[in-house]
Image (cartoon, rainbow, N blue to C red; front, top):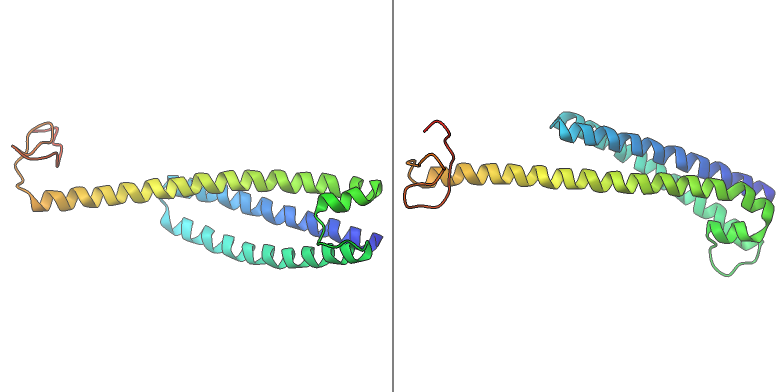
Length: 162
């Protein structure tokens, strides 16, 4: 059983390293989004996709290891890391720091991913607004005043040189 615990510890370390790589990529993506560098965003997204595939494979390995531990201890359900740590104090000393470290990295990754999603949504909204402004300008008379109101019409364009 000690061998399975060591294997699980190694899997958790590798899992944490991969998620830290994803976090670094998320930080790079954030900068690329801010700089409006679409080519770099695409490159980073491709790297993220490849890394996510590796994470999925590692997760399958982690689940198989956890299930083996559960069978060894005759547990009815697939145990969580907390449940495995509760089985023995020595196991807890090995697994708990790894679990906490992985959880912290995952929280930071979740937060950064949410930020990047908001940046993308705002960027898309800006582009849609820009194209709507252009479309509106083409469908209404081009006469407008300094504050951007077409004479007798709704707000279309702003010309500070008028």
